[in-house]
Image 1: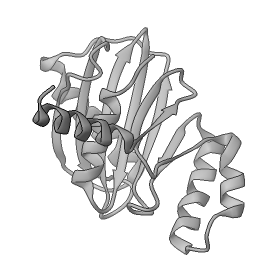
Image 2: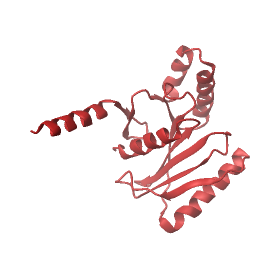
Image 3: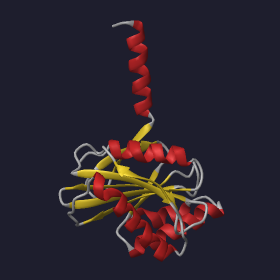
Length: 192
């Protein structure tokens, strides 16, 4: 084995060492950089009661606690990166088709619903079909300013697999290029 090949192999191995594997309650596994924590109904209260005293983190956990009571969702936070950035995972029993011709109309429909609920008029930054996860019937990516919180950005992958719609959303206030990359890499790593 050549010297350069060994170095390349070692670097690739080290990059994979920094990722942490998670198991979703929606029956798939995925990777995210080390530092993320997965919250569900079962563990949020323990973490909330024993977390540090940072008021921003406490506020985010309190909001997460309310959301988990009202909706079947998984939440991921990396407090060391930014205490406000998060990723949510939702799953719905749906089955519909999406293609290049329909995707922009669908993104605008989602944004219209968000504006109605969030009471903020915002613009769509990006909307397109996406290639990952490879096994999906179809996948799309959309990004816009948050309709719910000023200064935040919503980045979302929606995909269809086995007659189920998976919605994976990143909400970011800072380091949005980083959260977008982490979201895309997460979706690329999904295994059922």
